[in-house]
Image 1: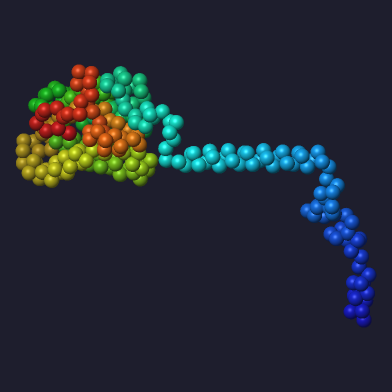
Image 2 (image 1 turned 180 degrees about the vertical axis):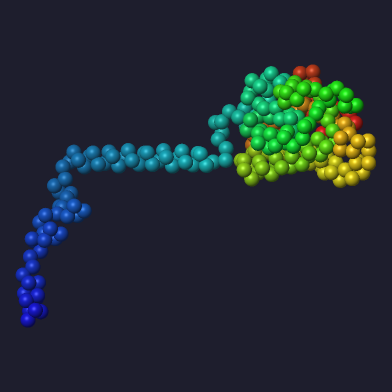
Length: 260
């Protein structure tokens, strides 16, 4: 009996009275004959909006592609390589930092401030005007990059080498990859030099005063930074750094007993 009543009620169900199927349109369902009753001016407006939307999408897609492309021809060439000029005053004017760890002027993009601070905190480092280690110079003036050449201990030299390797590792891991590796630590000759230094160290310790022997000279370098230094190194076959001799860039190493 219940089934019969249910069927009667089912057959009496009027679709036209149901808001989902009847004459009252569902909010998500377009009314019948929409194209016929849609005003002409609204169709033109919709077409205009579609054209504008298409143009915006095209512009956004082009901007996205440009941002991801490896190089932009319209970029000025000067942005490819950053350097610090040919004097301390010019380096400061360009926003460069003096790095006592490598004894060089560095563009800020390649300056690892935390690592340099850690290096300076390891010892009460001293710098000297003479190879005998008798004429010490003020630390503040050294950190300001006021000296062109100084003498340091063997320990300073060895610590410098290990920190340069750490800097390269940090640049690759936490920086912009190869583009964060400055032109000084990118120079294979420096890596080979430090390797020889460490291998010779057991024999060098037998010398006068061991690690405290003042037997290394350091000279100011102006280091290149930026993604194009690799292309320049390959093209010109020169290091990614230079020193200044008589207001001119020089890619030679000064004479001395043992250099950094």
